Length: 114
Length: 114
Image 1 (spheres, chains in turn blue, yellow):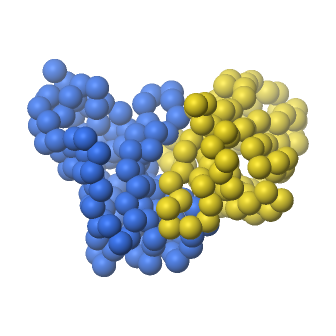
Image 2 (image 1 turned 30 degrees about the horizontal axis):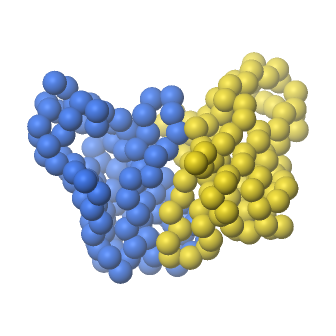
């Protein structure tokens, strides 16, 4: 069974800082990895999907990388803003599976203060 | 574009009562999923449907049944609710089994069993 760990569990930073959120997974034979954002009391919003062939994906101030050999992914947030405050989740599929079943980390709760 | 729609958003049940959570997606996705989210446990897969007409158990299927009514709709039924089923339930969908299986989530159903 795929196991996903996220570090740190919580992060509180002043506005403007560049941030790195970490995600590790146990089974590296995955086809992709997905990052989500969850606001309090809300659903999950997909941020980035990195396919194993891409190694990196960018959307605005967000950049996600994937290193399958080490079982790690990082989410980089540039010039953080108070509106970035949320919980960030990474999710990896079953080893070698394309069925889309996802295993989630417990998330990093981010607070960006003005 | 509505994406993934779940009903109801909130529900309180008494122990032993039954209910059905509804989910519909308008993205013509083949695969659909039900997850539950609990504090300290993260998101866990209950059931999934890789394509219309098929369903399979996830990590925590006990106490639940599902129906893939058609390509758009995937319902989750609690036959005899228990306090341990107090949770937030999320429905998700993705295009198909394959490498580009980006998952999209509904806004959740917050269920309390008393």
